[in-house]
Length: 311
Image (tube, rainbow, N blue to C red; front, top):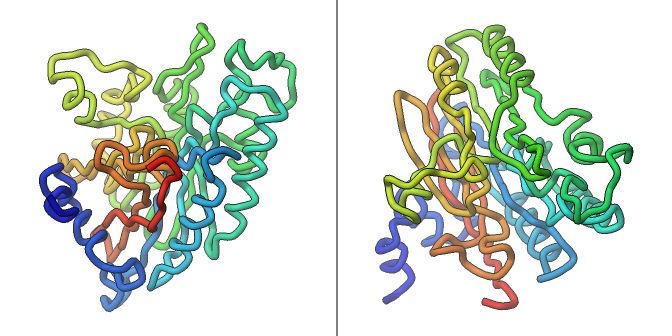
């Protein structure tokens, strides 16, 4: 079976995925000729580390993103930027965040980021980090990547972007997907200020919506709150009164595209694929490119030619 037929058989033809693999990266313009269109990148789950040539792979991905024509206006990193600081000591955490920030400095465009579960420093008892450490927990991400915060919003052109913190640390020194009460209150205030007309992009690491657990475990099985956001219905019920065009997700290292009531819930694969060990269940290493015209969206998933050492 050739690669094209394999992608069709595995369902990856949808959402422009097959087209993005069938042509050279540089030739894909995603509507560049349309007047007034602009684009941005969503890349997620880099899991950068000194092992498995991950720094080299991330550099190659950044080079490919910079080479896109027309040039995207900005990039959004979808969490799990490093691997791993949740259960490691300070020396390792400092090392991997330094690698991430060093390579990310090579972007030709502004980069914004949300937090992933692997980006929370020293929470596990295995790390041996006291809570009094100045970068304990979410402070390391906030200080080094998040512009001092773990969630925030910004405007670009006529669109509003909301960068959510979907990682809730549990009393058992683990995590679950959740938008906590303080952040949910902030989100309500933020969207009320934006109004019901302006198009909005919500960005989360842990998905609000995914069919992946059902495909893996069966449609009647309970889904762990480490896989999806536990209070997604509460948040989405509030958001229903606003013009949420895109909800961009990571965490699962697969590509998904779901539409519901005018919103699109897209899981944008993973830069690292199967944690830098090759293709993840038919989903290769890559990133997503979104093209906007007015309030309309097109997107595709782009690979960047990475060959894993163990593939």
